[in-house]
Length: 418
Ligand SMILES: [Ca+2]
Ligand SMILES: [Ca+2]
Ligand SMILES: [Ca+2]
Image 1 (cartoon, rainbow, N blue to C red):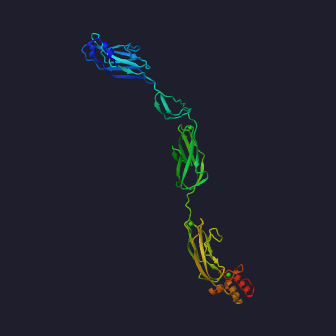
Image 2: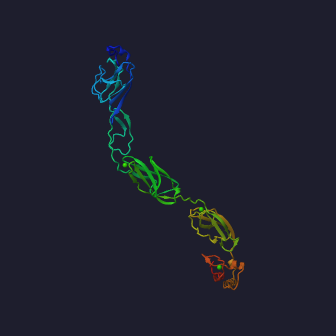
Image 3: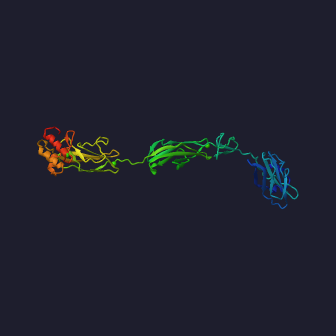
């Protein structure tokens, strides 16, 4: 401010008409790390008096007390006569001090006006950047994000070192030697002395997925690969590019669709009548989407277990009942998965020959048939086909030969072979 007393000491009427107003003050900021006011540019409104002689620039450091008799500027001690210019540059100032500036005008008679308004250029305070991040730590690497404010606060010492340490990484799922199917979550644990930047997942060396977001996981669709064994592995990177591979994890991919469909019986027939307990099976067929692996015929209607005895790999051609009469047999088929079909039933009437009425003639006829001299009728076949004998029981085989003749003779002579 130009105070009133100062104005009053001026002694010319010219003074009272002259008003100098600063309109622009520019502080040139120089220096590398801070703002220092070493040079100040000033300008002001021109005086319109016809007898204007020029202007003088006054300056003073650290005090508003008049007069402004500062020293040290490159342009000389205060005041600096700038003649009829309306701008001035004051250089060589001490940036650590606050400067006050004013301008006066003088006329051609050398009479000088009062001070203009006073412009203050505060001392330049070195600005200190006070980072809040990174933390005060002995180690940092790569691009370190920084936050904080500019001002006069504490400094945060930080030492930047070269990161040569690779991350540590391991696959945490699935387990080694496990069987997998469908979609399986692969997970990895990774850590680093500075920070993990990315984790990759591999199957047999081929990249499956990469993630830069923890927790590191990938939903692996195992149906996209063939059934069989494979090796999973993870690789972890840090921001410097150090990389480390995990140990491999062996898994068995098994997306085989289980066979849950039982075989279907096609046909199962027995002769309407039979003359022996052993009855020929004229047809037994079954089918399965995968394959029939077993056939079984039973006199019981109870479904047999796939693990029960009596299953045969091929369809049986005969079935032996325990007793004669009208009998029903049940056929089943199974597959390799242990699925057992529903049953199919077939009935036959067994009328065993009356061996008590056999005669020597029957034995002789059997010999003739066995040697090819006589072709048997159906009735003769039923009557004379008594051999072989298995476990004391006649098991007709559809053939009449000397074996049948011997059995007949034994019966005739009373030998209890049957
Ligand atoms: Ca590292
Ligand atoms: Ca099946
Ligand atoms: Ca026979």
